[in-house]
Length: 158
Figure 1 (cartoon, rainbow, N blue to C red):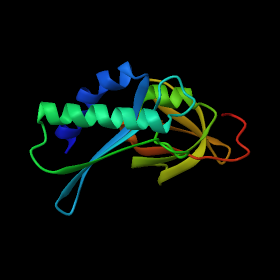
Figure 2 (figure 1 turned 60 degrees about the horizontal axis):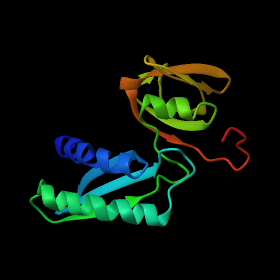
Figure 3 (figure 1 turned 60 degrees about the vertical axis):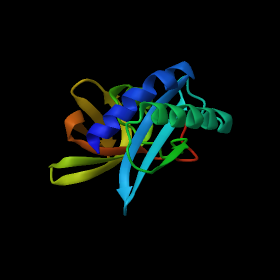
């Protein structure tokens, strides 16, 4: 699925750019015998994506996938906003959300732990530093299995 996902992402990027949107995450999975393609998109400038923007991208990518004929089986296409607990994947995302709370899962344990919750202190090419229980933990980008923002109603760093 990784190769197909990469091809779909490459196909979608120009459409997203043209519409002022950005790809937050893409899931290409199989549930039973059915193929699912899920886009999570947001407005590139921030501020959230609207329902008409979601619909416009859905229509554009659906037509493009059909024209390119890169998927030879039936599939279900979903396009949605990333939600309050949006996934954080790229260095630019970690930098953008510096100061926000994150739930991060490492591929390999760090000091005996794989799961960390805390504020993003900084991010650079080497990794992401999170304040966890008063200590700083740095996780290399290649060691991040998954990271999602945590929404807090009292979160001042929005």
